Each structure stands twice: as structure tokens, then as C-alpha cells.
Length: 91
Image 1 (cartoon, rainbow, N blue to C red):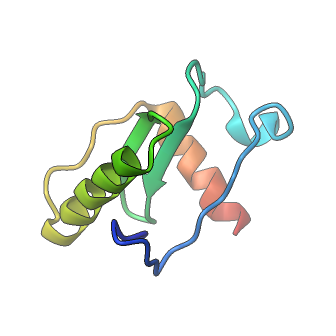
Image 2 (tube, rainbow, N blue to C red):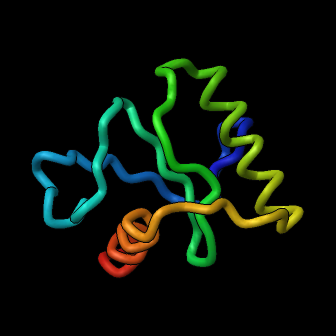
């Protein structure tokens, strides 16, 4: 997981939806940039994000808190869960 302070014990991937359409599958990305934060167990954030460093830090801080506290799972469509599985499977 990435930390709001800029550290990481995770990884990041840039996925070009045009060049990797097989990976994207049925996910309909309508707005850019779109961020997906997850681990092997759950999705912490999935959606468009303002291209602003402070916004990204707030989103990552919220994801960190949710991961640490094991709060309620984020409800995401099956297409997102399937995308997460495909990304994890290719690592």
C-alpha cells in the first residue's frame, strides 16, 4: 500500500486502457485520470481523481486508514473485482 507521506510497501502500475484493453475487460472508464487502490483482499478506492497531489494524498491517507482499521469493505461492481484479479494474476 502506498502511504500518504509518499512511502510505499506496495507497487504502482500505469495501465493504458487503449493498449491493454484485454486486461481492462468490461470496465468502462469514462473519466480520467482514474485511480484503483487495492490489495489482494479488498478494494480501497476506485474512481476518477482530480490530477492534484494533495487530493491524491488525501485519498491514499483514507485508503491507509481503511486498510489499517479493517473498516467496512468498499462496494465495487463485479467488473472492478474482476479487473483486480486480472492485475494480481499478471504480477
